[in-house]
Length: 144
Image (spheres, rainbow, N blue to C red):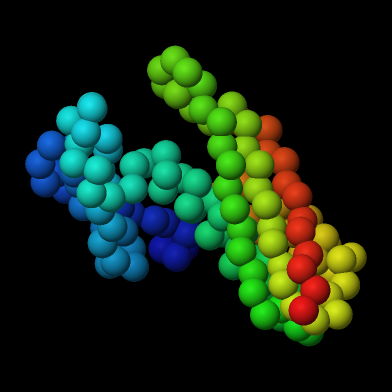
């Protein structure tokens, strides 16, 4: 197996429920939890990081595809709305992604194609998660 296909990560305990994690890229991130469960609320929780991983992955795909299509996007955002189970393990039971594009003369068909390509082919995070949870998406366009 090629080494570029292997991701290695490490997490180091700090205090309370705060940890510092590092992976192949050698960039550190801090994780924490709510005060009522022993955290300090000083950083994102693991489930928040999962949501960020999903929208980060798909956003990178979509903007790369949109640039190749030469769409004039001046602002692009992806919003995550996840509903979690009330009982442990409190997994996401449904996820909705809202892709918001702003620009001049944007072609909806191209934006939709980029989102579909990310969802169906390129985004490794969504392709893993959709095996366990229903993921829906919506596309909003704001013309300049």
